[in-house]
Image (cartoon, rainbow, N blue to C red; front, side, top):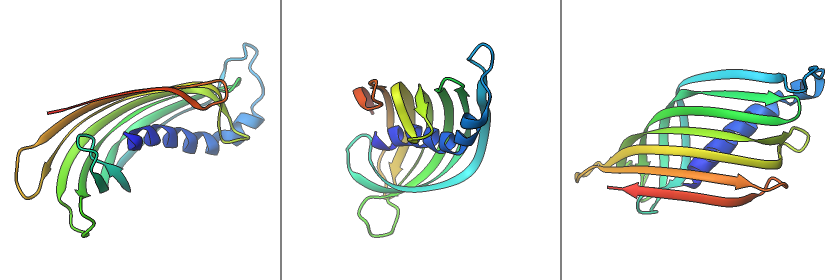
Length: 173
């Protein structure tokens, strides 16, 4: 759960911080709403390794995965930002820190982030929200049935850019 929220926030901050010079140098459009950043990105077999949690049991995991997907970002001259994206990942996970993978699986993640971004501070400066949907399946490499999961989440930030409300729902079967 924390991993997915971090993915959405991290993707947004990484792309926006690199776009901050454009934000500072772009002249204002007469209607005040012209996009100064309007970019799409595609990635294939991008390696990601991180510590996370099993979405169904909460068990700590070390995860190694290959991600393929795309993202689109748009920043308006007034600081409003929208980022949408999605990717598919094939992963392996180590449950007991013995450097051997115990779990394998795949998932699909889709996310949207909207809000006010301040490139000077490198973060949100006002109200923002993020929504994601995460669907996947994994299995233990020593046998046993597959576990499927679906998780949705929605975060809302206050006028200071801090998370004010969060709703997460997970279903495993």
